[in-house]
Image (cartoon, rainbow, N blue to C red):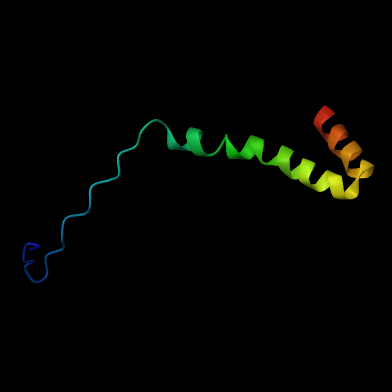
Length: 61
């Protein structure tokens, strides 16, 4: 059973979740660099050459 709370007393805040390594580095860089390339490749087959050339020019810059 959960302990009874006194009226007007806030329960203690829950402990923060354990963080293994820097979360921002693990979450952000991996999807962000990988997303643009597959998106361009997925778009290029439908539009054929024009978008491929645009994508290549963007990548060269």
